[in-house]
Image (cartoon, rainbow, N blue to C red; front, side, top):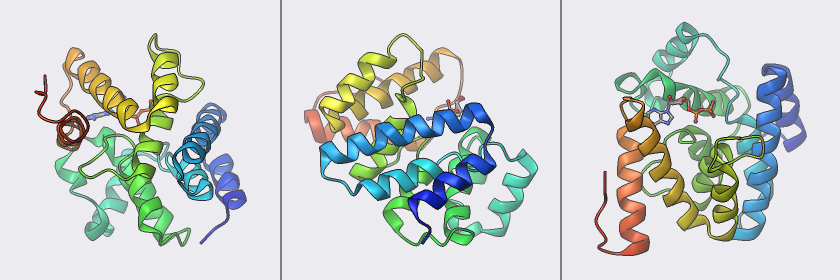
Length: 196
Ligand SMILES: Nc1ncnc2c1ncn2[C@@H]1O[C@H](COP(=O)(O)OP(=O)(O)O)[C@@H](O)[C@H]1O
């Protein structure tokens, strides 16, 4: 498996300056969240550096990688192209960078959508991406404060906000997000109804 330093170098090499800056901020928040929640900080750093590694690949290249790695494609071809880059990043992490750790691969794979049964690391990368330090939508700072205070509750808030934004923008919401949101709410708040 590659080192954190090597993952950092790969992110720098493969991403534009702006996206590298985002990635670097995701890493900072992910490591802080890992520290606060008893999660391995190196795993968080590795997943953070690699989460967007496929984001700037052209769509036809993403499609090719998904087709060539059907078994690892997590149903991508039935899902919106906007969520492909995380799945492809996990495929590259495994096949090109030798990452076998399923927790790291899962966190990279589901970073745009979440999924059922999210681990702490899945939540950390999902939320570090959504609330990273350069995000400037109005709720970004409070969402970041909330997730730093409580990972489970912050993740429910993040999933809910993302679903609401997508719906308001007339976009289809990935099934994985709807399932994650319903499950996390059920687990955290008990029987409280889901409003989506
Ligand atoms: N849960 C979702 N279901 C469907 N599409 C989504 C979902 N979350 C994000 N998207 C779409 O995927 C795009 C990329 O998401 P993401 O990787 O989180 O963006 P960013 O580049 O800001 O990190 C978003 O702009 C949005 O259109």
